[in-house]
Image 1 (cartoon, rainbow, N blue to C red):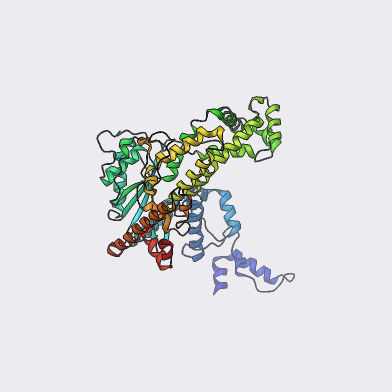
Image 2: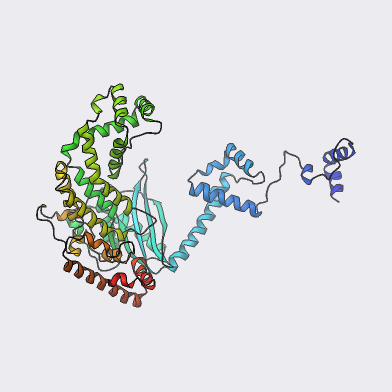
Length: 513
């Protein structure tokens, strides 16, 4: 029947087949089915073929979504040729199919999974931030965090355009809509934001706590990420959930920023480093000479005003360069004024030894794959102990060290009060306008209930043995009080469920020791 079909419908192909069979010089072995198909009409998978469906999903989900490639790549002849080389039978979908059908279907599937996840959570925490791209388009990003089966889970809840002024009222309205759309009204316990006054106002409106709502709040607050806030905006009302918590990485940024702003003794050295970085990034001629002398790929990172640790990375990169080669390229390019002296190199090394622990703490506490709230108390104590120990050694940077110590005690005043650590007498009076919202007992409990720390951080506490023991007993009381509440309201989120899991793993001795 097959040959009858070829003879009737594909006479040319059947004629060629007959000629091949009658040719005595050819191999008379069985002819493959593919020999009857014209090369101009290749065989491809059908739309329902498992392989076609697998490759289409992989193309869209992994390349376009996860790798951030544009949907238009599927129309590129070079990309199609590459895919053909991998699997000639795979039919690459066109851009219209990807944008109009496949991506919406993926979005629908992901939303369904998110709904199931949120329905299974009884309590969640959120992080919120407004981000502006280079074209001045603003976006509101919100992530949701919870514990499922004893493991910390985080998902992107929303990343949407944010139009108009970034006032606290508008941010609160957008957050309220997100919470309502996802059925989280009775589930949100904490919202972590930066310390911009509009974010503080937004959370006070959202939770009706009264923070920053005394009639003096600025509705047209500067949406700058690193904006500091007034003391009147910092009358936090914690103890009732839900509540706002300050982002620790951002708060630490404010401490170091204030410290580095008073660097008169090394200002000229920092100026040289900044100009050197500008030359590397802005002058093609200097960049060519720089790489020719120091090696291809060598560079000096530029600084970012909203990321103080970019200054640390810039200075570290300069110190790590070959000093003689750097001097040669600067002299040859007529920039002798940027050559660093031996004294200036030593100043940079001393400065780096001071700010390196702050850089490590910043990287540690802004991780997105680990629980970072348990790091806050140990980090604050460790940095305070380090700065205090350096005060009598690096006299050149005594002003910087005092400013850093003052910033730690001002910004994290509530933490020091909870730990029973008095303010050093040699520091200036408390600047209440700079204190941030870190007065929740969850910070102490998180540090204790994390097996990475336990009570080990007490070794950095400057108090007596009796004071440390009293603090330990007080934190134990908080933990067991929470356990009593858990039995009543079934809190399985964040640190409460972590506490239960630790107890099940026979970690009771950790909190009782």
